[in-house]
Image 1: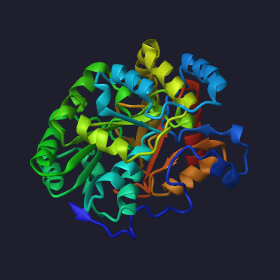
Image 2: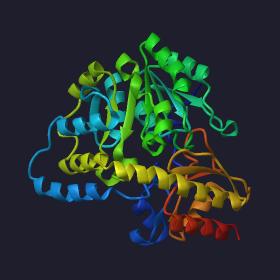
Image 3: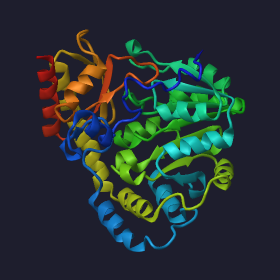
Image 4: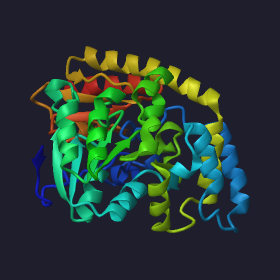
Length: 375
């Protein structure tokens, strides 16, 4: 476990945004209209929102003159059914980012361990709270393997330990047995293991059952973060997302939160999305199929190491020393194609980029554009 100073945390990389999907930034940088871009930088479902969710959102607009439910009670019930957990163990919010920051404000941690590379908001939330940040690094040359006992030692010395599963940006899935030693260490002390499962819904159900820590929430020491922004392509509505933990902790964090967090349109669309089980079946089948084709196409260029992924994106290591992440992103951006520069992920460098999985014709366009850049 290694420490970094707050000054090092989340430094910007050559004017690139901290997160993907920033079309306004791209339009200004590359001089193109917003609608011209093919966006591979944001990890949302390539199928787009479920049709029922769009219809529900339109219908909900009729009710925007009234306040939403202060505690999102109806949404909690829908999430409870979807995740198969008790409603009192759920705290809804706008996406996952708001809830990550709220958790840190409530816990006021002094020491935070972040498994890296990982979502930047774990570090940012801890830094804002004045916590000392430690990094538990998973090296690319080791395939981002998780070493359970090492993570358990880090968790034992921390107030909060953040890990993303399936991991972003690597796409690797960790099974429950790999995380249980860290959870036991948290339970033996006073720490919390915080597992972000926002991409778990893209995994086949049998894999998700073997990986998710949701069955462990009642015994304490654990927080699960998840959001509907990725799986149901509801990023513009900010989810909704939720924290899942033991009922006593959720009650305390709810009391410290503000009411009306989730607006009527987001709550209604999210509820409709979770009810569409056919959409989930299509998503898992097609994303797996399209990911395989994209992976093979990128490997055939000979310019990348493509890391195995179980979700809707691929992490690439650039093998050609003549090209770096920034120059590749800019070359593609000028062609109206956006990918994610991963140089600002702690634990990665200027040799890494990430692409989401899209429809096969879009994926083919990306591969051809990659070939043109190297010509």
